[in-house]
Image (cartoon, rainbow, N blue to C red; front, side, top):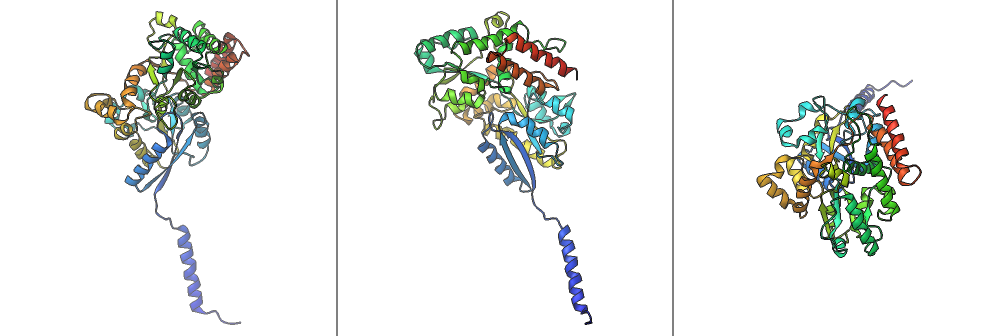
Length: 432
């Protein structure tokens, strides 16, 4: 047997040591954070991508991966993503209706200690209300939005109207004439698909009729006389050919597309629709869209309701189990900063109060071509934005209400039957 070469043994031993050390070594590089948000209201994905790249240039130790999905997919992506460890996302956009559910489930990181005094005093108090529970803060405000009433100035002028409607009854009158004149086939378009959008529109109409979702004891009240009258009115506008029948399958993007194509005279939508209506690359009504205060029903006006909309604000919440809370918070600070929000204010106005005062207001008005119109519209409408119920079972309750509205609009059930069944579901959910 040939003797083993000691030199060879040494080489083999050294190779094994290098191999072991190499396998255990960690290569240095930037921390990657994953952020989930919507591709509907708010900044366009291309704008947020630019913000992320600018942030990375300032912070080369952090890489930001953005994911954009339709609004109605976000909730379930969060719940699914939290089943993994680490979670699929380090942070996500959180709608104003989700915090109670997600806090109860332990999904959101308490960021109270990270919020500076300048943030607390500089951002609108109503924005903090959406993410604050029992004195603790669970997110960084990002978007303050409300639904707006928009109309086509040319169509109204052609129909002989000098002003947009102030009540929903007056809207029916104007829409009837517009239809009779053949200016458009269906004068009104809504986002009444069986999605959260229809609950937003129902909120606008319900509070505009003097109604509420819950009574003083927290019991469902949306199935009382005001709620039934609202849902009956919705169905009647479809039956009369005033509301486009495609509304029962339309989301906000479909409403936008219909309105900027010049196919409707009236639309209720978020702020982004106005900016898109003035984009000549996609719009046929450049310069023709206008805002008006959201109408109310005559009964609501008699009861002192001035206007009624819905709060569509959102924040960014950090996932409680993320391994990268510091890096994620640093990016959210940048994304929601005063300078960034002013620069990208064409489709979502800043959450910072100072931007609407003094020299800062002058700068905000000059930031984009549409801001001289959208800023006054926001200041006039947001004070009348009503909140959907802040209850931990809201997502399930909303699903029941969406189904009820769809059943009534399609004639499967009467408005009273449909709303009574939804209200019974809410009672059951509240008791769990």
